[in-house]
Picture 1 (cartoon, rainbow, N blue to C red):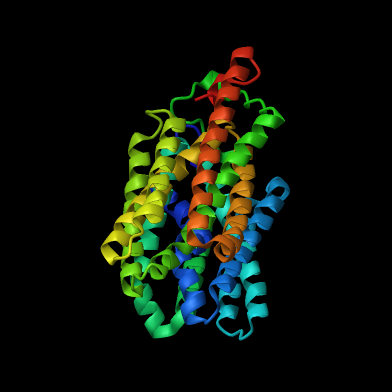
Picture 2: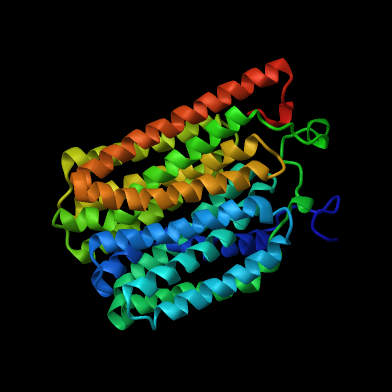
Length: 404
């Protein structure tokens, strides 16, 4: 049977693994961003601010791509767009090996960001159309963390053998592998009922949220990823600036990928058995605790740094699937997930650039305090959207299947 036929499971392990691999091929620059920023600074010789701006240009490309997809995803085949983007991503990464000027490097990283944004957005949108989106988002993030742990763990070897070029070639190989798996992507026409939703409730498309609530949901997503963009790419330099040696920082970042797996695995285990909003708040609370450790305990040894980043990434990877699952719960057709990917990448583009600005004006402490405030804003806005959605349901403005 074809995908979507009655009686055919929507996700079989091999198919889901291929969808996830495609998504990881697009998101890999974000997954290993601390190592990538380290490569820009220590291997390519760029300054900390130049490296931060390169990350910002990549994320700007992500944002431009996902913004364009709000229109293009309704016109063109998702699989064709992903395949074209993966080819362009591989070409951009290979070309970066041969350029010698910062200006051309900026252009190519922007192109890579656009390509990766197409792949990541449509990959996550495809996962959002699956049954048990909570579980599948968690599984996808868990598998992404496995990839991140492998790459960050091998980063000293990669850099010693080939410098930044070695990491860019790893990205290229992953893009080629993603291209081989791109036929697994789902589209809106292949969506299935989510587990636990009734046929009657899902037979009718959920009515659109009022624009003010859509704006609140998207602002929540943007605030979360602005905070992540201020913190995640700079985790490497958070450690080295405090006196932790490069090898210990690399080791800590490798181990924090495993704590991220734990956070995503916990989300997968819990699924939709508890309030998505409360679990989102719990994950964000864990990240805030780690940021406060950076601010007040000032970890200066490899062990202290490792403990702090373990906690930080655990919280991010617990919160992330529930942030996306909260969004997916408002709309069973995947449209709001595509818009959320726009907000995610806009936030991800602003975050590193803002981090570079805050670094120059207020230092690392200013970056960390800003991230604490942005995370608090994110969970507060999502709570507002959820309460407003509940009130709309009571008035009969939305379908019950979209309420959680």
